[in-house]
Amino acid sequence: MAKEHIKELVSKYLKGFLDENDLELYNSEFKKEGKDWYLRVYIDKKNAEKDEYVGTDDCEKVSRFLSECLDKDDPIPQNYTLEVSSPGIDRQLFQVRDYERFTGDMVDVKLYKSIDGKKEFQGILKGISDNKIEIEITENECYSFDLEEVAKTSLAVVF
Image (cartoon, rainbow, N blue to C red; front, side):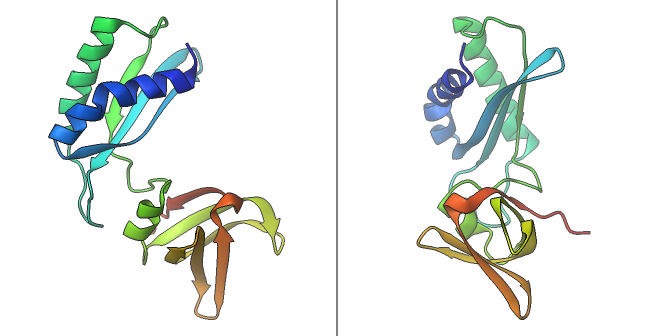
């Protein structure tokens, strides 16, 4: 079964359940690591503020529900491990609202093509407008990237 089809199934199974529990599907992936397959589902609080996150109870509830759906319909032919979690402290930003939520936070940005000889930048996310993000590297150095240029943006883990 195609990976994208599995992602669509997960979304379909979870839609109503997540709505009822004030949660949303952040992302999902079905991938092989070594000889084992993993179905990873990332959930978040719906319309969450910057400091609102899902807890282990939420993950457990979603895992039980999704597991029952998958066991009943058995749409995935191979054996796999189901994992349900929050997006984590190094969460990847996908949608405009993700960028809006984490404006002011330190981010890692990876580009498809080099700019000034670099593909990776770390700085403070200053905002998003017209599908462009702006990050501040230093007080005097800012970059603006069109989202189409960005391969990946994630929250930076700063110690």
